[in-house]
Length: 263
Image (tube, rainbow, N blue to C red; front, side):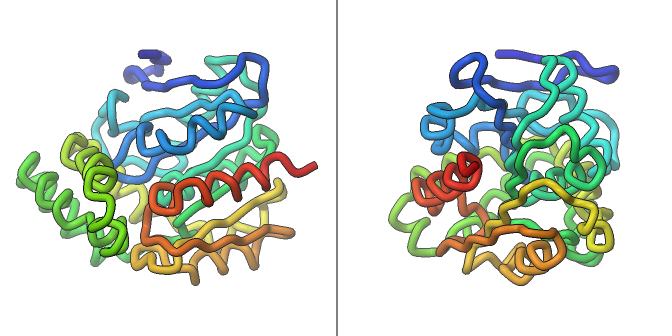
């Protein structure tokens, strides 16, 4: 296991792929950890030095008092790149990771090669959705995280996928039950408060937007909104719910590589 020391604690990361290859950062969704990308790493690591991190409040990374902000989480990514002496990297983030990617594109575009944002939006949900969830998690702790895990299967995967691949779906949803309640609530607040809709035009790096056709959390309309406001952005859509990288698997990986490897 590898860690970078931030001012407030340790940020957990993992590197795969050949040294000297271009770096590709993978950023997890709310309630998962860096292993949500396990299916992608073999294909990505053939071409890139793959850098995965557990976002603050998740996995083995630091859990600090909330609420967090997307700017704070984007700052953690930049601190990780600085610590590893990586001047520039490609970035691929899903859901909350996609919000972080948008923030980086807006505020630190010089650090990015290409940007992939998946199953995300410039604004995700309303306070009326997030505030009760934050309150419940902080009140009920681990029990709330288990309840969220059981409810997340229907949000994260289509019913046919969850039925056909119960072990694969279960491995991902178990990450939610294992997430720190304090860290989860603090990240919920970061997503709740993020609204990048008016800033998307500042993204100048080549961008690919990916949506899931059956995604009720961040519907394709949110992806089309980003594509329309980021000059030259490409768009792809897969039959999937919220975690298209897991559900679409090899097809997702192939499309991302096609984009990243294009001259």
